Length: 102
Image (cartoon, rainbow, N blue to C red; front, side, top):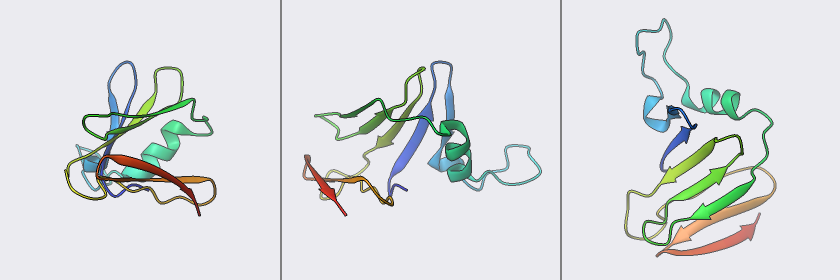
């Protein structure tokens, strides 16, 4: 999971964000943002990854108008970091992107 703000966006709306986690929004139980993210992405594969050169925002595209945006809110080191099991890991440092495999 990311240590930064993130949001899942479809062509129609913002579907879920990291800031939604724990919110009730009139529901009986609080939102678990990570679970909602997993549910909405499902088994979709990443079709494209982009890093904005000005903001260092990271966007994963899943096709069908669905994208996960990781939003940089810090201008110093490590604007975002990704922790995942297996596969590539990305870390942003001083607006330079590095790819490493753990």
